[in-house]
Amino acid sequence: MMTLISLIAGVLTAQLVEDMGIQLMLNKLQNEDYYDRQTEDCLNRLQGFIEENQVTQENIELLASWAQMEKNVYVVFYQDVDALFSTTTIPIEEDAEIALNGSGLPYYDVTLSDGTLIKAELECYMDNQMFYLVDLAGYTMGGGVFVLLLFALIHRKIRYINHLNQELKILGSGNLEYPMTIRGNDEITGLAEGIEHLKNSILDQQLMKDEAEKANMELVTAMSHDLRTPLTSLIGYLELLTMQRYTDEAQMQSYLNHCREKAFQLKRMSDRLFEYFLVYGKRERQYHFQALSCESLLEDLCNSQFFDWQEQGGTLECRIRELSGAVQVDSDYLQRVIDNLLSNLKKYGDTEYPLEILAEVMDGMLCICIQNHIKKQGNLKESTQIGLRTCRKIMEEHQGAFAWYQKGESFVVELQLPVSPREA
Picture (cartoon, one colour):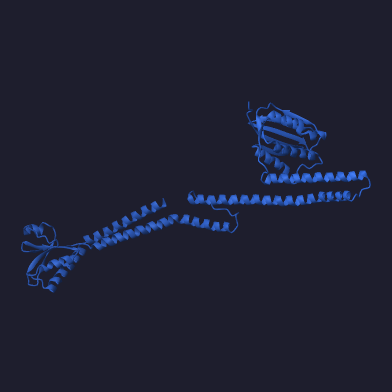
């Protein structure tokens, strides 16, 4: 569009300059003084040629060479009533009256070197080079207007490109927080938006990488400290047992119980480490989904999965609405979700209050809500909540959802699994 506008303006300018130049030349040509001066100069040159070359009636054909040299002059020579010759070298066959008066051009007396008087019908024209100069001036002005106007129109875009170039240098220096300037609505703007999107993607990746590295450091620090304490105690008790430094069978059994307790403590920590890699690392095996009816899943959940909770003295309160359809689950991974929930119940659940389980099918999803009361002296929040994040990771792999939150004095966990029609 900018190029088209500049081109039209350049063509109009060139046409205007040519029209004005031609009009000035025509006005100059129509000026009687200019015509008379040109004619007088032409006659003087003709008379000078006659005197210089001694043109007489015998060699009067020499006038033809003069007429050919005068490119911008139309001339016809007459003697008495007959046209001698013209610049076109075509003799005029008409009578003198028509020849002298019918053309409408003025004629002048010319004297040859031998005194013979002849007539010269003479008209001067403007030099064609003047028209060429007018054309050249028009093209030059039109081209200049085209270039200047195009530059003026695209100057803002060029300045915007230079500005983006400076911002890219800032980004290249490592300052990815620097915002890109988004201006206009064209290809350059699209390029700037693409750079901004790429920069934000890199920032997000760096943020995720930093968070992962921070979590790794926290895990390594915590695990190295947590593992060292029970491992040192376990080694100490085993040394005592190996060297038989116990007084009686009861003390030996006490040492064995301590060893067993420390071994289970190490197992729990290794489970946490496994859960961490499940969340942030690659899965160790592919999921193997199997169809399981919603009723069977809830029956197993209420009757056997929370057996340990009941062994501790807790009670269950199951409210299951009418269920239909089946869910696709991997039993091993789903068992890990239940194990994590049981671990949280043992740590933070209050057995004086019933464990509430609510299940229903809503909007094509099997929704399971598990709620229990929190111990007053307990601490609900884990150091990293890695176990709960493991559950969320597993449920997302099942195309479902997992959420947890605190509601007053209760801790609530919500699980969702997609329901498919039950096969016949």
